[in-house]
Length: 201
Image 1 (tube, rainbow, N blue to C red):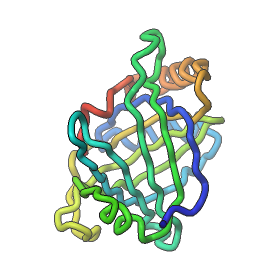
Image 2: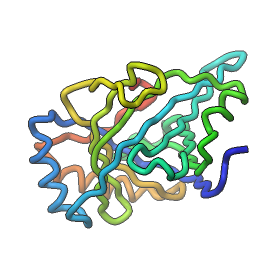
Image 3: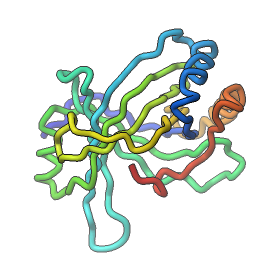
């Protein structure tokens, strides 16, 4: 069993958008002024999306992620629930999020459990923090040869931007804080509630 420790079961509050590469430096400059860390963390991650198809309905999806910047760091196994329909007045998308630290044998373990890898991609970018809020600005590249993270291709000439908060269920005031923060990033970027189940990397 590759799972080690650090299981976190929380709700994720999420806003997303994208910014053209040509406007990236302006956005980073704005974020440096608004966030707690003047110099953002940088990262390069390899993410694999695994599916387990049942008898009926949608497949069960798990995401396995490893850091290419820090190869000895644990893998992370992530489950993201369906977005809550609930209160339409919420300013952010809300979904269940379970994140588990795991050993490097995680992909083999998932294969043995019957999961099949559907697709993989590499993300590279910056992480800013403002209190409980996390802002990720990254580009996304498809992996051209399975398992070879040296052989990738950018998926677009823009960067994905995600504003998120992990919090216990019922902390809906978080979405108001996120909306206020997102307003300060306009007109450089418009962050919105986007259903990730309708996206595909």
